[in-house]
Image 1: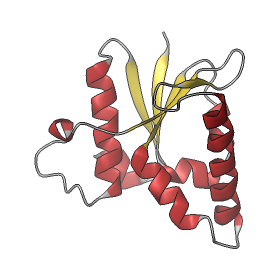
Image 2: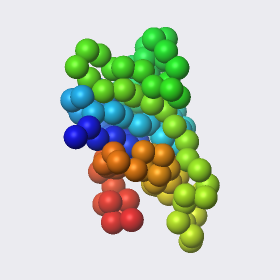
Image 3: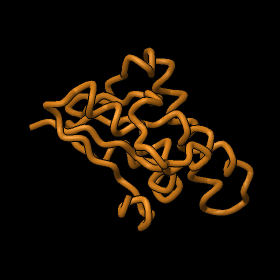
Image 4: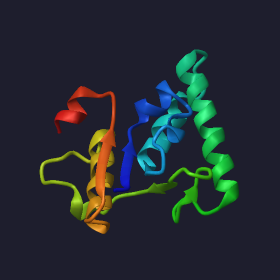
Length: 131
């Protein structure tokens, strides 16, 4: 069964090629993740290098098609989409000033829009996994 993976910022900052690691499953990049990656692009270390490489990868995909509708990563790979969330899907008590909560909201919205598909959040953030 095909899955949808929602990727947290730290996934990209650790591995700029992470979008190609999920086989023929689909990838959702929350809009908030783009903001978060942008904050790191000027760093002069491995994190900055991965931020810049991620931005180039996403820009190359954007040149192939509409990222909101989704763009096929490569032959035999899934579709990458950049998506936001429906504010009504964010659980009560979640502070929307938190990037983590916006990313979780994106995953919930994806699940609501495609209830038959397994939606999995990928993160290195322990507290986000707990949420």
